Length: 287
Image 1: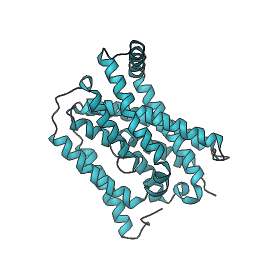
Image 2: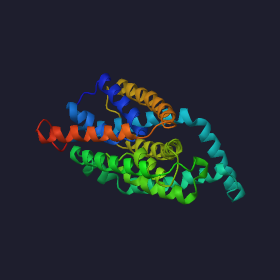
Image 3: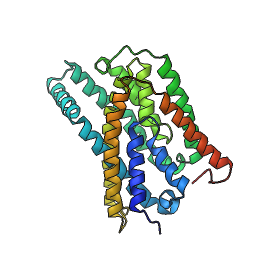
Image 4: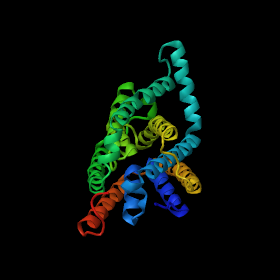
């Protein structure tokens, strides 16, 4: 029987919060951290615990993001409803609201169609390490070569579709949803802060929708929070919500003045550590 302690839950909650919005892959880290420390939550024999806890942590970061962006959410939701009523797009807010809606669709479709493949085949440590390297290089090259000539208000619907299609790639652990959407947004000329802000706003429907969808499946099926784990789950959710909020606040402030180089270096270092552990036989390459 797997035991998820409050300490492990808090650690994983902080990991989820720190990595959901930073361009380093939260799904990859939620696999790698337990794998590194040999915590049983990611083992095949504890699939129910793994799924339910993953949903709980993602809903925690969703809450943290909603608290930070609540004004933006109200603003764009109001604009979207107004646009629906008038059957047209007349303002910048309405265009951005539709951009978020349209940009969400590719990732939602990919997630629904590829859920089983993602859960069973794409979460191996060696593959996560490779994805960390590949998309670190892509982020670095695009960020260095792209101009910072556009703000979030300049996003067109075509840009939103392009960024949304890129978001579907993040279903592979190690890619990073925020990383690939920020990279794509930088590629279409957005400044760093605007790229990150739109990336975070675009992630809200995906994170919230996926959490509600998976949560409903768990609650209506046999896979529910295992008995005795309620306290650990609560600590994990709180930790992910608080750390997620702080990362959004800190990252948007940081990107007004600096670039993504520290995150690129971190991804490469994390990948090197994982591959080194695998090659030396300390931990297996698969779970």
